Image (cartoon, rainbow, N blue to C red; front, side, top):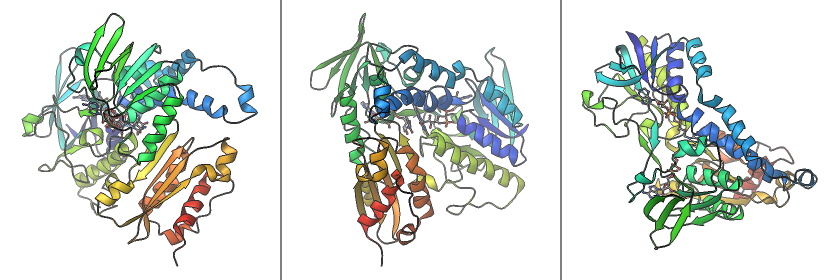
Length: 469
Ligand SMILES: Cc1cc2nc3c(=O)[nH]c(=O)nc-3n(C[C@H](O)[C@H](O)[C@H](O)COP(=O)(O)OP(=O)(O)OC[C@H]3O[C@@H](n4cnc5c(N)ncnc54)[C@H](O)[C@@H]3O)c2cc1C
Ligand SMILES: NC(=O)c1ccc[n+]([C@@H]2O[C@H](COP(=O)([O-])OP(=O)(O)OC[C@H]3O[C@@H](n4cnc5c(N)ncnc54)[C@H](O)[C@@H]3O)[C@@H](O)[C@H]2O)c1
């Protein structure tokens, strides 16, 4: 018997378990693949490792003096080898050591709910262990790549994000279906490797972000030699001895050695025994702000599986709240579940930061102008070209970038910020402070950015907005 059973040892499950142990609980953490989950082995870390070398090479090409010194091409095998080092060649020994050191009991095998506060784990040899929880079960089983119902697609054995992030060779050509984060990041990485990339998007690119973000990525991908097809449906897919043949909605044909499907995610809830507690398998798990599934006082769902924000940092933020609140409830301690309290993930709603590691990078937090309008805010939108800033002109010749600040006119606070441009990712946390802290615009005038850094974008945005009287 454990106080808490956590199902799934991705970044999120690990953090729920860790916080609960720190709160004095005993915890069993169940994992059937690699401890560390998607982010460590097939998502964030390997994808960023694939992108970094190309981004650095292109950055150097924009700084005379350095550009003359670096004249070769990307060494693709060296990039892939560096990526392999980030995934520890897909070994989780290091993470297992961390789990054990943190005082968490790791149970290897596939876990399924088999009743209230009960999880049955089937090990790889078929043996079963029944675990019972004194206080809670937290589902942190994450998500899989979604393969849409397109004629011939499944039979053509496409790559998903797993193959794209773990490939040991760059294919000669790669077609990509999708226009979201995975599609654009992987198109950038593989185009940089010299692979002939064709991206097929049924709409625009990165449609949840400010429109100028996707537009900049379309231009950059085309500059990298990729073909970008917008507003293009995929009708049929077939694999032959040379690779894949993709028929689009307008009747044209794309051929490629490999095909990556990057069309979103589906919850890993179809085979975890949800039916044994009256829930429907295969659905995202709805939760309140303390990550409790409505109708239960012992069942939590944390990370991708609750569909609040499919990002590692946001899932870990939920995990800290969930681990702490499970411990507090178990001890009968005070629960701080008011907005922005210790035990809630309030930032999930309107204050989520995200970096898309395309070229240019896109760093965004909070609401876009469109989302803010739809949410009923009275807003003013302030735009500024980052290239006009002294820090940006020193950073790279011909620096091109754009910033947008969305201001809530009723409260005089910032609802959202988007930066598009090379190396803007490290500008994001200041924006997150402003949004989460709801810092009044008048006070931000006293937050002086150092000259000449790219942070001077803040002064320019404020000057463009105007100083409140
Ligand atoms: C290509 C790609 C790049 C990404 N890049 C970024 C990025 O740069 N930054 C970012 O913030 N986010 C990124 N993401 C999103 C990020 O990977 C996810 O949000 C994150 O991995 C979710 O963590 P999780 O712990 O909820 O799920 P997962 O990491 O999927 O972990 C769930 C774990 O549960 C285990 N499991 C599932 N079912 C069972 C079961 N029944 N029994 C036992 N174990 C089980 C799984 O094996 C897995 O280890 C990226 C995603 C993709 C696809
Ligand atoms: N840098 C990062 O933070 C990062 C990187 C990669 C992934 N992620 C996360 O992983 C998640 C998954 O990424 P993703 O790119 O797979 O999903 P996404 O939701 O970002 O994009 C899905 C894309 O697929 C398209 N699509 C959906 N169904 C389709 C269909 N039937 N036919 C054709 N196109 C279709 C959509 O129009 C959209 O362009 C995202 O939520 C993202 O937050 C984050």
